[in-house]
Length: 213
View 1 (cartoon, rainbow, N blue to C red):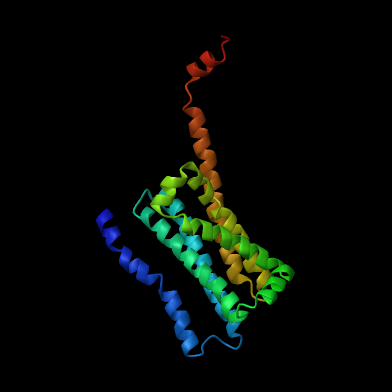
View 2: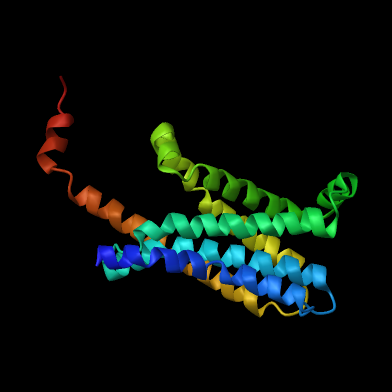
């Protein structure tokens, strides 16, 4: 089973690039609609968010199904979230504002939703550049602490998404429901593991430790 799952990795890498090819196709054939800039931002941002959600969903899926086959794909999906988030940022900087840093600075100051998007991207960027095994070994326990900020990135990305959209909020509400379910699952598992840890503490050890020296 492990070998079969590993053999799917090249296909998974290729499949994760389909959204980018789709966007390029729509740009080439002018299928982005009347507001092409906004459409490009939303499309790339949507896929960054989707890959982030997929990354967060792997652990709950493994816990429920008892199948560890997807664990090696967690890093891959996380890197694709970083990849599409970077394209989202580059579209804003290069396509929308043509690297006019003064205008970009004013836009960031005046648009509160960009603050949350910037926070989310800084976190995803930090996780992306420290995702290698070498970084994990070098950082030790700090690596796990840093990568727990993925939940902060998810929350900031949702606020960024909600604030910039107008009109139909069905899709962002759907994403919000997913992240609430994923975080709720982790909270339940945290309490469950805490209770199991307390039950496993030997009662005799407690009695000995409470005796005066």
